[in-house]
Image (cartoon, rainbow, N blue to C red):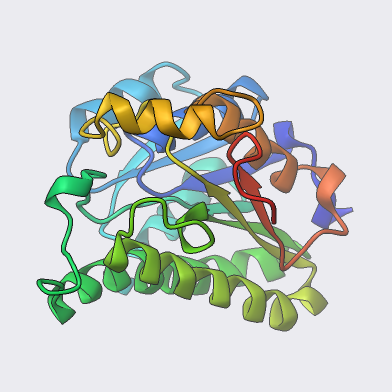
Length: 257
């Protein structure tokens, strides 16, 4: 049925897919035979190099997710290129951010501009992509929306106020949208990781922080981007057809959800 397409028959659009976790997500879906739209903002060379690894099934498209016109054009291009609408949308794009606790805004220095920058990229970006995806998903009788969150709003081991607030807003959208879109056969879920070893965003994280998290995690190690991407395959697959409005924490058991 349209709401449970095998991964090999899907068109998966991943925002912020040229580097880091986004690239791992793209590789995971390509390995399953899916067609993948590699969205990027600035990393043209990395996005095109990734798409070149599977030229018949991958397409790199530049678009700022904060711009609804550019986002709509991206979905139109993807549909024309692959001959069918996007079946799975993964909102992974991260506004310019570095997980460096020493450089983070503190309660005394945090500004609304810090918060707004994250809300624009995370919440507004997801709103734009979801609205652009809906016509195609409704046309084919269903779809999958997977939002990338964080375990930091449950366990702020490092209190990144701006980043965490934006991801918490995205969780709220995940839950409310699942209610509205369920009758259309569209599931909306969130995957929340902790610190991943290692992405571009976590490259500035001191080794002592990695060690601390590993020591307090049941698996005694820090989750990798590849392990995190495995869970995205589940939410996009037929196996999750009755799962929506959920937040699955993928962090080796550090946070119990």
